Image (cartoon, rainbow, N blue to C red; front, side, top):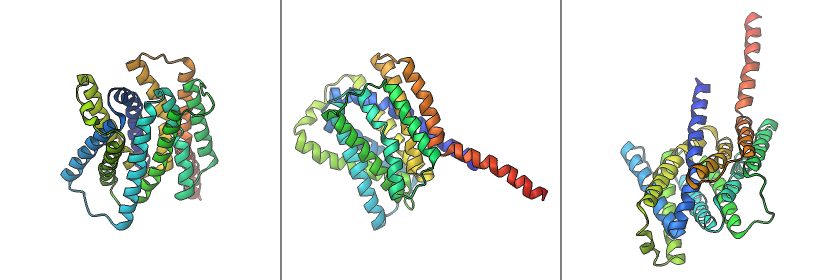
Length: 311
């Protein structure tokens, strides 16, 4: 029963990775059509209102303790304000494939932070999984790194690391706080923070949110409701259940699905070595999440139990 529950959680996170891979392409379209910070404000606010409506409807909301407020505010600061600000700004200065490569460092960053701050056990096989996943990312991108980071790539790196930090606070808060309530509060609080930033950096930009083609607004709402609201709901629930480090390993799938989305919607070509990279990523996730170790431990335990019964 426990194994089925674990597989179900992994399946849910895998589904979120498909959405987030597609979302990188959607965000590239959106920052090319709207002022990036102002667009991000409305996108995050729409996601926050959607999740708040769900929470109020389910009647699971409650008052937070001081510790829960601290972790929620820090999660919103790093995971919403910093992450989405630098992500939007970075995408205006670099292409989607470069952004995807840098964002793929998220599992490694989160696993290391989880070891330092959450006491996660980093076994040799989980290290192998992280390494295989990163090799897969390099294959997917074709090893096209150009040395030093550009300003846009630096912004994406900061966005990635800020999100990794937020996962640690989400894990700390959801020990006692329902992950759905925390997700909703993070999005709403973060959207207010981004709103103040937009007033400072993009004054008078509200009028530029009007007049885009209808298809762009469809992309906006899919990104806000499906990718951000539903995606964070499910992802944060997985963090609560299996931990920040193991959940973040799945982010290695985002580059693959990001490139597939680029092929479908931006007519970019996918090469054989990128498909080969996906195999590394898949194997890396199996090892990096500890799932392979879980199976090995279970198989070792069966003969031991049979031996005890025979004795």
